[in-house]
Amino acid sequence: MLNRITITCLTLAGVIHLLPLPGILGAGQLTRLYGVAADDPNVGILLQHRAVLFGLLGVLLIAAAFRPDLRAVALIAGLVSTVSFLAIAWCVGGYNAQVARVVAADLLAVVLLLVAAGIEWRKSALA
Image (cartoon, rainbow, N blue to C red; front, side):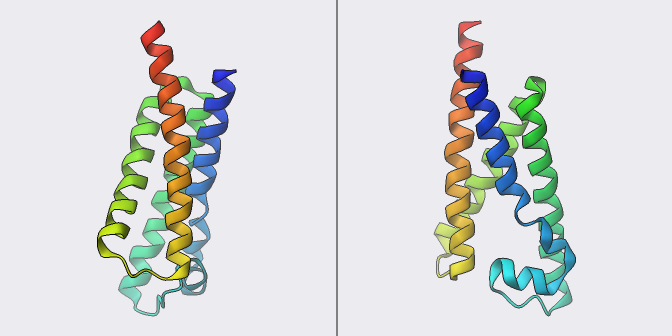
């Protein structure tokens, strides 16, 4: 049962991290995702690269759901990513509705990752 919970949590967190992936398609998708104009090529490059990195992290999290040997690194990477984004958003503040959705999604991802991490920690402590 606990393994199913871990698989579900990692898969859902992975899917959350895949949501920005359409941003690689360009400025229009980035505007829809974040509500910011990505007309400046520099902003577009940075945000498209962000989409690629989140795609990679999403794939890692989903792979870790089914490959226990990847779980520790996936959990650490996922938590560092989501917690750092939340900390930055909290410190900067004043974000728009689209970024608020990202904040909410990352809060959910943190909960999912903490549940999975707790289960994995408990399993290793009992081994």
